[in-house]
Length: 578
Image 1: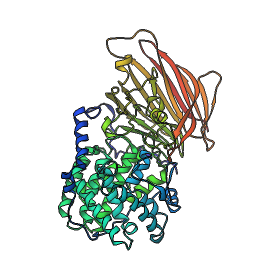
Image 2: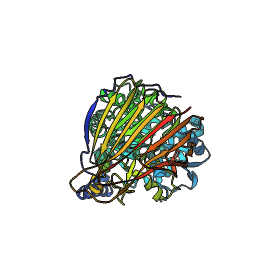
Image 3: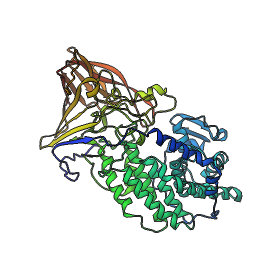
Image 4: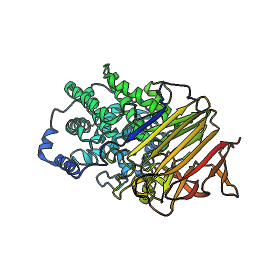
């Protein structure tokens, strides 16, 4: 499937001229905030919190909402064989010890969120799936029902778990064992009471939205829940205020987090439908704003580009989610607050990160990717970011996963082999990009973006400015990367820098003898020519993390040069030759 040229739509309010994007808020939690969070979690094990979890034992659920999404068929098939398989990490269900926690975070999140119920229900009938679901449920209950501690009792896990347990109740409540059924329902009620007091303690973004969605679902599905539902709706409105920008983008600036919130809100609507109640209008309005923003960071094949630790979610998955929302719209080309810019022409799409990274507490595996871009020609990705720091499989070394967050792992300019925004040893983001200046122009023949960031200003005395121009037919992408001197203190000598272009999987490279050009052949036989001026071109090894979290060997074009105190520039062009 190829991209329809969306240059003629004015629905997203493209505005010409400059706009300064500043980074708001702090970089992470203060020491006081960290201590407060730690103390809050410690209270979960106290007798007082235990008393708060006591209450009436529900005898049944009021309704069973539909799950609007299809699960992962490969994971579901593995479950039918008695195996949990997450990104290559495999455990036998019969030997699974959920009290030991000797598995990766990604595997733990899969189990604790009960996402496996969706996968299992997508490949089997109730009769086939119920015994497996009950086996996993019994293992979880034995390890976690009475032990109120992380990770099982993390509020966002409970929010997702309540949504999964209620939507797939026939799988987990088909047993004739009344003691087991009572334990499931009572644990569900205790989890809801836990969320009542903890949902607002979760960081903004998908985790807080998930927690409050769980509160609302519990209010809708557990008897006598009207008060809880109203409280949950008020909490969700606060969570959306803190988690979604006015242009529909997630504050985490991660396309996968964007997709996650859309799925949570869409599934929540199904719970209202099961009760034949109208959801708050804000829920539908938020979905309608978030879908075009999500499409704005999708390539021509509808698959997501790789930003802020997220991987390239396949186009079929994205299309299924959007179909479930019922929203029909075009991609948002300019998300001012979310920070992504989209250029499209013919069947080509360029996506640019034109904002500072998110503050540290809003996203795991935040990246120093400011002014990086991805570029696709129809179904083929030509220029990519390595991506996938959050989705990479457990078998990959931690050092490599952390390396995927660096500026060098993105298709942009790197000064002195350092990050435009610092990445600390504890995983948090430090100082770097504080503001981005952006200018965009559109005309009948081309679309142009010029943007700059100050991430290297303090350390090296330069501002990085990047200009990208895409022709209306999508066959010509021209760029220029400049280092402009800034500040009173100019550093003497030469400063090395490199402009990196990570290539998509299957792109074949043939460099020319003069070190200024290369031919790039795409898997579908299309041929692109790359030329540069102002530096020396080399071809180096690279990697790209696919939708399964697996690193794939690729190559990258690297243009190296040195900048004197007065600055430097490298110009380059990508032109389709066939």
